[in-house]
Amino acid sequence: MKDLSLSMLITATGNSLPLGYRLQEYSIEEVLGSGDFGITYLAQDHTSKKLVVIKEYFPFAKAVRTRQYCVVPRISRRADLQDYEKGLRDFINDACNLACLTHPNIVRVLRYLEANGTAYIVMEFVEGQPLSTLIKALGVLDTVQVRALLLPLLDGLEQVHQLNRLHQDINPEHIRVRQVPLRLDEDSPLNQCVMPENLRVRKDKDEQNILALANYVLRSFDLDIPVPLDVQMAQRIAQLPLKGLPTQDIKPENLMMLKDGALVFVDYHAPVLIEFGATLRQGVQASSSGCAVPTPNYAPVEYYESPVQQGPWSDLYALSAVAYAALVGEPPQESILRTQRDEIEPAFKAARDRQDPQLLKAIDWALAPRAYQRPQTVGAWRKALTEGPV
Image (cartoon, rainbow, N blue to C red; front, side, top):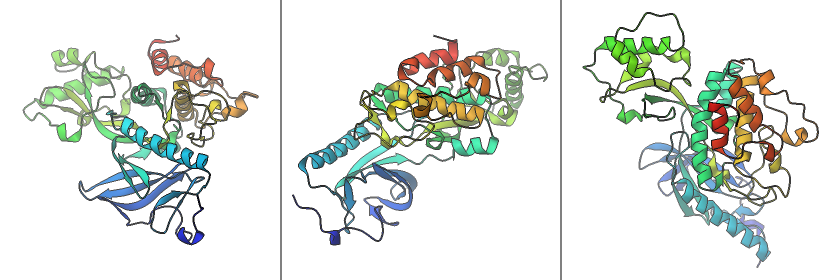
């Protein structure tokens, strides 16, 4: 096999597709970022007239782009070429698997396509702010807010793990917080959201009853307000999953009724886990060519060491590091340093809001330096978060 002539390669415009480039029905609007294994774009879908995010398979160490915008291997050894092609197949397989996921707290994969000698994953564009921006603006979050973030994300992450995949790069930049309506129902978990097109306010419902419901919600947080006007409605709402809702946002104007009589909290800020281009099969070792570059302070030690197996416990470490940063105001010490000398102050002591010791102890458990010291599954950690130590 011969190496490509340098005259065929792009040298002036870089490795990304140019702005305005048409990829089937999508046109590239912006380069959002890049990593060792791909480039992420913001694009316009000319069919749906919506913005989408497109992830391109582009392993920088192994590929180059020609002047015709094709992606080709830069290596000539057959073994290296096979490694490149395997990475491309894995990228496509991951896209197919992730497209099966339908969860309000996981970014939705719309499709994948093959073009330019490589492959692309098309995902929904998640509006809202990165969690990192909110933490920076607020300084720290309280335990109610952190619990409201963790539980929905855990539900979504559990579905990823059931596909035998890992996210592998959970950090505050990869969690978007968007405003969505939340159905409050005895049969609905906290993370069940109502899509805007399904939200219909019951016009003939007595406005006084809605106010009564709001009053009862406020009373559930021991706030000093009048007894609700509608006792029957108050009894109905008594069992609703309200513990994770931010009290400052619960007010009459943020409560609406569906046609079926269900109560909807219209100002719920739902966390969404994005950037699934770095997913990895469970059980692989840190030396695998599919591993993403670890994000400092959020990556567990097994991302740095070889041979060490990765698993659900690896994602749980990263998510607990996010929770720690939100509560304390700064991320934990890097994991590779903690294995030599652990100087991190436990969340149970470092958090400014210590009103939920059960949550803080669970965070400290998942943040243990070594994998065997942590919860091994989402279910185990969720149980610690909701029921206490396992």
